[in-house]
Length: 304
Image (tube, rainbow, N blue to C red; front, side, top):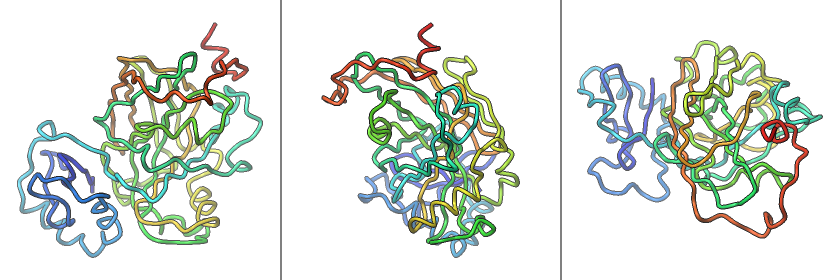
């Protein structure tokens, strides 16, 4: 199934003919009113999915869809307990960044849930003169059940589904989480594809374009720390909860975006997002008061 969130917190199933509203089954807003805050209906749906599956399947048979282009898709998991991100998880990206470590020996970091946005929400560039904001295309793993210390051979028990994800970052040497924490710096969508629909998550093609220019192209078979390893590592440290998101790392080809750009990400068997970029007038802080001078290999190359 493809589970989407749209039009102010409604939840739907994406089918060939459009979107089928299953908000009543999922316990989400159905009358156009604002969803509860925080909007945890998607988390409860993920948690209770197997119990609700018969009703969802019946809705697919019995309810008429509305055209996909008639709704506004929103991020499918708006309030994850945490976003777990693995840095430098492709060797080629590590080389372009001049990093001498990889995810296998570095571990993960956390992005705030407030950075999560949807496929139709623009990435807002902070007003930090002299700094570049870079795109990073990633596969997002959506956790499906509460678990702790899950061994890698049972990794699949934790996975609910997959989504496209962009991990935006202000380039610099400051604390990584700080530079990746801005609102809108984690677009996720356009929906969640349940794990049973993705036969080989370890062999998915992923591409990213900016204004039609291909910037990134890779396959998840090239991950340094594979999906079982990421789940085992994260669950060894902390409890994973339904709706938690794992950002699996980005391949080589990261680069800057500017006001007016459109970022397109496509992941085989998962989906596509076309995310606009706008320049904001906020976000400056004294941390960025000093000008940034490379060496970050990638930024040196783009400056030439």
